[in-house]
Image (cartoon, rainbow, N blue to C red; front, top):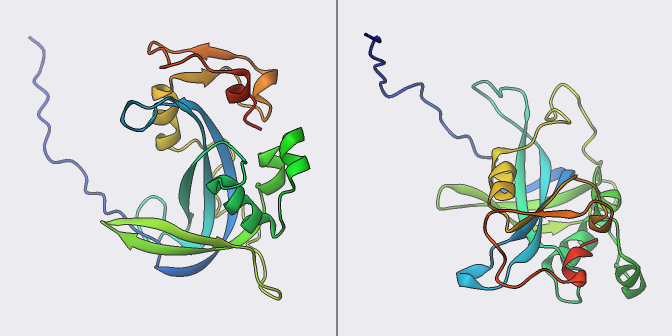
Length: 201
């Protein structure tokens, strides 16, 4: 007879939030999570997540001494009123011209590794980004630190979960969607993705 497995409460994990207020950060990675289901049954939207590594560090637990991460999710489009365009411009410290949008902007190459200033607020027990700005003159950027930054091959659980739930997801995680093709998951999209949907960047 197999021995019973008795499970109790388990080890305690206390979530640690970065401090509220302005913080120097650096764009750590941009993840493409494919076509995500639309809000309240709407059509699926191509979606990216930008992760920022912060100057704040964890003070306890297994991640003690490591820099904290915070993320923001966007519909992957650079139209005139898109939130991604607004925040990418803030990070880059310049306007994104319409000609760049027509040609297709490689968003990873444009913003990964770039330092910026972000405004953090606490809402309902979570740390959220309220605003993003380019660094003011004279404010040093956040240098890379292999001992404090996340591992380059680290993929947050949130990204993995979104990719698993995608209506359509990429075969290979590269910048140009058109270069890698798509594979459909078990759940078909409300409408098939168009060529425009696939030209995220």
